[in-house]
Image (cartoon, rainbow, N blue to C red; front, side, top):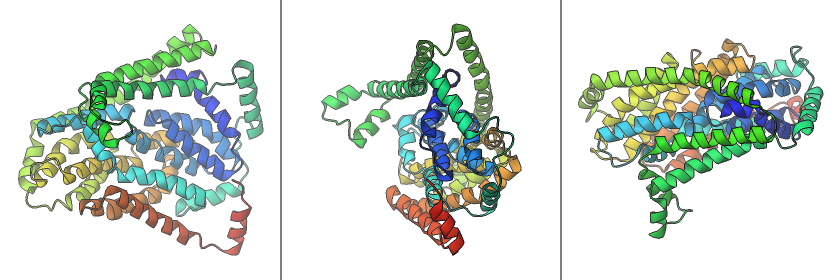
Length: 458
């Protein structure tokens, strides 16, 4: 579906719309972050589309390639991991459903995913960090030096056209064929989401629960509905097929693709899917090895009663981060730790599905993403640097201080307070407030920098 949307000019139409509002460095970075959130379906797709499409624009406004690579990377896995529908969700739900069945937890994998969503502190804080540091225009560490170099240089010579030429080409192409090319992306994505949510609603007996007095605006109602979903993989598959059908119809009606091009898109999309297929097979292999060795039961026997339930989720976040950083795979880390660590959390909860278990679910998923986000051998890190035309080592070196800051805030001021009983909303407010204080300290700049900051355009 994504391959068809790209070929039909759907995302290019969105870029055309964004160009109307890009007036300077800050708005170019905001547009990049917004595009990263919009491409929530898959982290690979996010990196390829956002990096390649926004590179000439950010180059023109003298945004460093290092900053572009960071924005692409920071809105790829964190967004795909949080999205209620993405290539990640099916894998995460399958792992959660398996461990829930192992522990006899009367909840579906989707329900457990939503329970853990409130404790995905690293991903949520990284999104807040991206927008906060853009709006306040404050950088630090190696990224600050990279941005200062970019401000003093002319736009890179390897651009095929200037920004004005790029805008003219986009506008003339759009007017010649269809003024609403963005619809080629928005309609399939909206259809995908609506079909998926509606399918979950019917599969979870949503109409019956609505007649019993539930409300569509109630969070508890949706938790109850999703908790009774029995066929989430089937619903997701049909939602994907529906989105693909809409993408093909939009491309055909707008006249952008003929039948032969559509067939080539389907073939390219199938080949691109082979990489995550291989990763999934290897990750499931790791999981099955751990299951056969009864690693979870062994660790539960050793650690139950020896580790405080208040400290286990923060420790688990740290372990997941180290494992993911060393291996370069978040999928593999999830496959190893969910079946081995969650039984320990369940035992620490007194063999009940309680707070420690739910926080631990979020800690594993977030720690895996954090380590993968920083690792120089991670596929998303490599693809983000390639799509942004930024050397890999420069990307890792400039991104690492930002990721470490967000991870430290998540660990010290989110996971530990949440494990002690502080509501997750308050822990997020605490961590974001401290993040804001950090940036306010950075705003103590000299008069020359203040004058330059005030004269910069949005």
